[in-house]
Length: 159
Image 1 (cartoon, rainbow, N blue to C red):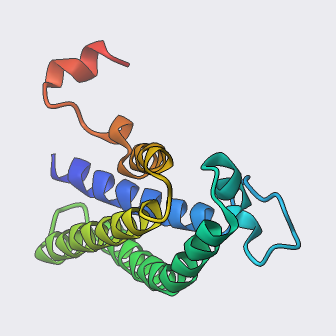
Image 2 (image 1 turned 135 degrees about the vertical axis):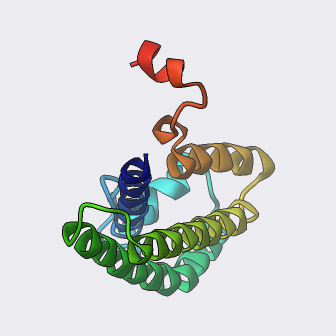
C-alpha cells in the first residue's frame, strides 16, 4: 500500500511537470511563428479574444511563466530525491515518508498556483468564454481519470 502511494505521488508530480512543459512550451498549438507567443495563438482563436484581451492574457502568461519554471525545477528536484531514496531500499523509510510529504505539498502548491493563474486568465475573457475556458483547464489539470476509485470493486469492474 505504501509503495502504491509512492508510485502515485511520483506519477502525479511527473504529470504536473509534463503539463507545465506542454503548456508553456507550446505543445501542438503553435500557429503563428511571428507572434511573441505562438504557443498561445490557439487560445485567442478558441476563446474568441479581442486583441486587448489577448494582450492581457499575454501579460499574465509572462508574469506566471517564471513562477511555473521555478516550480517545475523544484518538482524535478523532489522527483529525483524520491527516485534516489526508493532505489536505495525496499522499505518505506522515514526519509522516504518525508520526501513524499514534501512532494505532496509541492504538488498542492503547484496546482494552486496553476489554478490561480487560470482564474486570472479567465477574468480577462467574456463570461461565456471564461466558463468554457475554466471547464477546459480544470479537465486538463485536475485529471479526474487519474484518481484512484473510492470503492475497491470499481477498479476491478471498470477498466
